Image 1 (cartoon, rainbow, N blue to C red):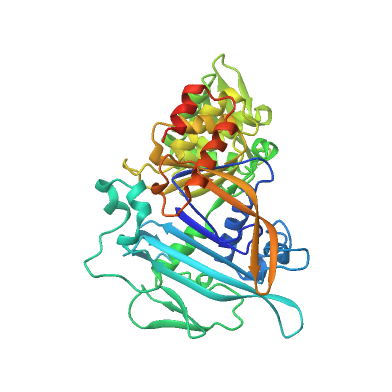
Image 2: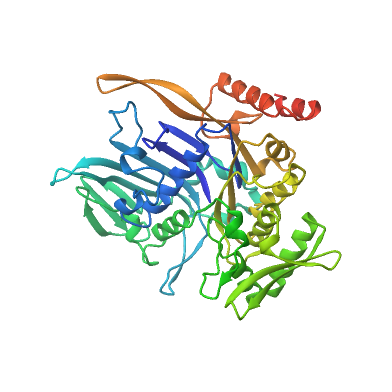
Amino acid sequence: MITKIEIDGFKTFRDFAMEFAPLTIVAGANASGKSNLFDAMRLLSLIVETDLKTAFNEGNQRGNANELFTQFTQTDISREMKFAVELLVDKNIKDKFGGEANLKYTRLRYSIKIKRIINDRGLDDLVVIHEQLDPIRHDDDKWIKKFVPKFTVEKWRPKVGAGRRGVAYIDTSNDRISLRQDGKGGVKKEFSSSNIFQAIISIVNSVDFPHALAAKEEISNWKFLQLNPEDLRRPSSYMAKSNVTHTGENLAAAIHRIKISDPQALRAIERKLNLLLPNIVHVDVLDDKAGRQFVIQVKTQDGREFTSRVLSEGTLRLLTLCVFMNDPEHKGIICFEEPENGIHPARVRTTVILLKDLVTHFSEDDFELRQVIVNTHSPVLLKEIFALDDPSLYLVWLSEFVTRSELIGDKKYSFQATKMLPVLKDPKQLSISFSENEMRYSLSNVVSYLQNMDTETIKEIVKA
């Protein structure tokens, strides 16, 4: 679970910071920078998993490497890009070789700085110039105090003895990047910080370095959903992977895996979809042996049966969320682009209920860390979010472009930057500081944004 992100030098982000709840909504008009947040997270997810050239490759990003750095003018581009994320990770970690370990610290902060250089061949290149992974001290952990009840804190953040602070698992000093085993003892590996073309965390693959592996696994497994109705409708071949892709492919294969491995989970999917769409009473997946593929089939109240090929986009989107909710293999973060697309306005409430049910409720006996981050320009969806009965479960941010004037070196630049303001009654809820004017501005914007909200609900939102 991500609890905070800081971005500088990526696209339209300059000295940017925001915090996250189990359910986080980023709202704003089109072209207000909402998608750039997901782009930044997607890039960081690749950076911790592979080398920089692959991560920045145009096939993985919207734009080439130079276009991903902040552009002050058409010719003046930032030379450095920085990311920092604060995480809550599971206290148990497994590697791909069967190794297991228990973490001493589940609250971690990872940061990395990347620089554009000209290499020995006179070509543009990218190098890591700073990397850090630290435990977050309990006294500094404001996020836990807001979102996790005291009676469940130690379930998610193990108790640490008095005076125990822990040292960095990855740190940069004296032109060297060090990777330490379990944050204590001698340095296990050191790397010269000149010409490092890959994040050190990306080479960690065993529980010999459990905290570094936990941070890597958390960041690299972020899911970015842009569901495509044609992919959702398509049957899955026998050879397809049994996990839903970011566009919705392999949905049938995922349901088939659940049906075989955990029939009760399939029944739970069916019950949840029936609560949301009462006309659907049965969900199944057919084994088309002739076509060597799996096909989703539903039955309606009147006994008729339909395959996914003819189901509406809205029905398939809700079914996909029901699958994520009840899939024993699903955990981690889902970043969902405009979940209201293809959903009739009357069913947006059912979508919000599903999003709420998809995330970890720290006051309950959840077993997995699950989080959803949504971007939207739908006032209808925002209205339903504000109607949720647990305000500690979600955060809403308004995204917009602002003009910044800044002296960089000996030049003054004026450029467009992304700004996000939280929609909160009490700005002290966050560790990030906002001025009183910014908070008022945010609240006034949400009122105008939710034009179709009833007057009484608006009054409740803006009460100080």
